[in-house]
Image 1 (cartoon, rainbow, N blue to C red):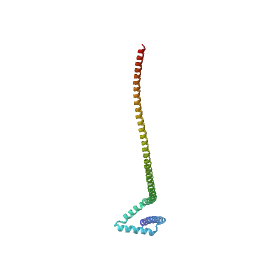
Image 2 (spheres, helix red, strand yellow):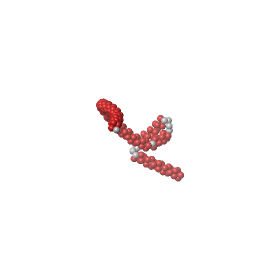
Image 3 (cartoon, rainbow, N blue to C red):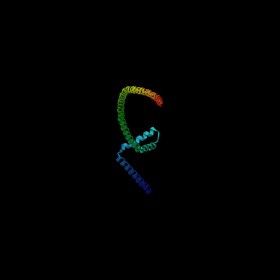
Image 4 (cartoon, helix red, strand yellow):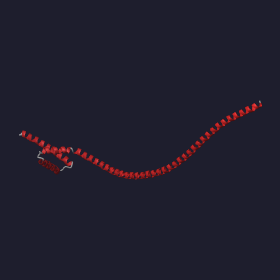
Length: 196
């Protein structure tokens, strides 16, 4: 009987210890906000999934806690997703603003190109008018230069003719001089011969 008493006492201590451990676990779960009802709902969920997947409750529980272990990663991804979504919204807003600015710049570009075309046309017309006027002035100047050149050429021809006549006259004069010298010499000779 002592042995049975000791065995019973040992079992009692063991059960007390287990009950105290379970009480401690329940107390901690309650501190975290889990009620008995939450635990019963969790148990019912695991059993239902086990039945739906035709799997043992122990395996479903293992998968469930593995999924819960990923919660931190999922939560972190959700936060990053939110940050990235904010960035995308901001970029979309900037894109919209830039699109508006681009449209405005395109309008200004069109206006400037129109103004440039008008200016180019006006300058072209002025250049044509100036070119026509310049061509007319140039033609007048060329005509004036041609007339002066013709006059100069005529003067040169006249001068050449005059030089030719002068040379002819000089030759004739030289010839006349020779004739005169000869005549005088002959006259001297005759007069001198009569005196002698």
